[in-house]
Amino acid sequence: MSTYDWDLIERLLHEVQNGAGQSFTPRPYAEQHAAAMAAKGQPVGDLDQLKTRACEYEKLLFQRGFIESRPEEDGGNGENFVLTERGSRLLSLIDSAIPGADSPRSKLDQQADALDESTFDQVSSKPQITPGAI
Image (cartoon, rainbow, N blue to C red; front, side):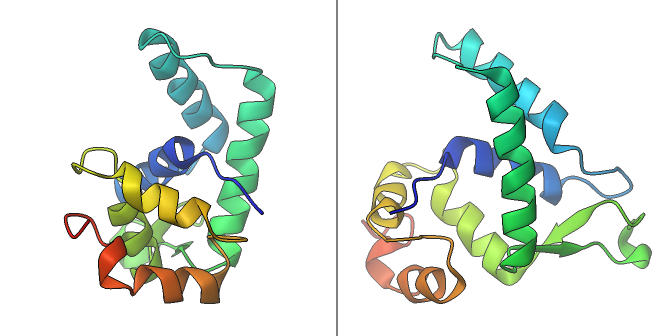
């Protein structure tokens, strides 16, 4: 069973969402994520591991169709992304700003691999997992 760092993935997806005209840089985003965790008094762990995980998540999110290269006409520079429809659904499920967001995360964690394309599409289409429906 794959377990994901949903907070880190959320951070990366928000950076994709707001990244027009900027290069996507997962390692500095991981550093910023670690600093935010430390400010909240949460354990950070090995920063190099967190940076590596952020790079792995970038690759995974791209390969599995959660993000795609940003078109030039939308501020694409060859080094940034946009959320796909699947990526937007993922962000809406794991967004910590949405009340009750922990429940969709726990539903995703119950899957063998929540970010497998077919698994995610199947699970995210169920009304009981959508934010606010739980």
